Length: 316
Image (cartoon, rainbow, N blue to C red; front, side, top):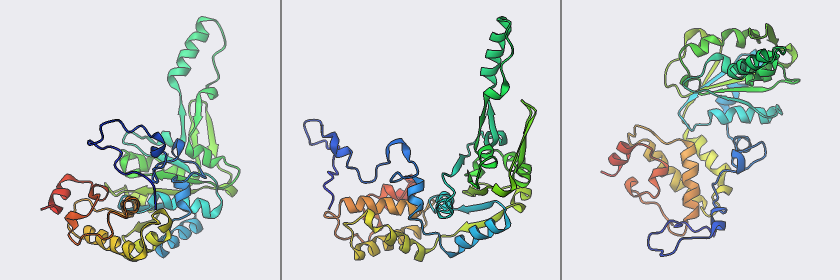
């Protein structure tokens, strides 16, 4: 049983709670630096406990066999990103080259970055001092695609949440993903791939908008559907994360979780939220020997429900 004190913030306590050692005992805290290949709680560590399901495993092997990008869609928290880390671990490909797409991302961001401001500053300074212009190669940063194409072994390139990017972004990558090459006009160079070391490419999408048809035609596609039996397998495979919860309680928690998902929520919780919920229930196992049948009375609903209207509807 954990010795962690749950009520660290307590209005009834007159003096500040000064035991910082208790904060270091938080079971679900992120590791220093946010992760790393061997850090507890990191994507790489989580991948070793990932349960992919037969259909996803089949799709992964298909994409590898035909040497095409694998596009994975599904609800947030269903393991799309972890699937890439799982594959890299299973194949011994080393650290995943993880490119996180943002709303302002353009295709070149995946290839390289040329520091235009610094270059022109240094070029101007060199001109005033009658020195040779700086070498543009010194102002170029290799990004994930470049690293993948020039690696001395196959690597796994993850383009995460591609649906967040502007609409042109996927189509702007068609040549690079098909020919495994790209040009750098700033230095008049071309980066090509050793055909023996072609990378594996995983692409994830939350399906916030439909991707362009030409891009979809170049991918192997898999949708991670919600699978109740797989959820139960995931919960059991990670039971050491909530050791205070016995098998009966775990089954009861999964039942409440599944009922909550089917209660008409706008934003349904996924496996990620369920695992966090089980960890907090494990911390307070003595206080919650059973879970109420009434979903509105479940403890720590804020871990599972992330929409204020959903919360209001459940508590009606």
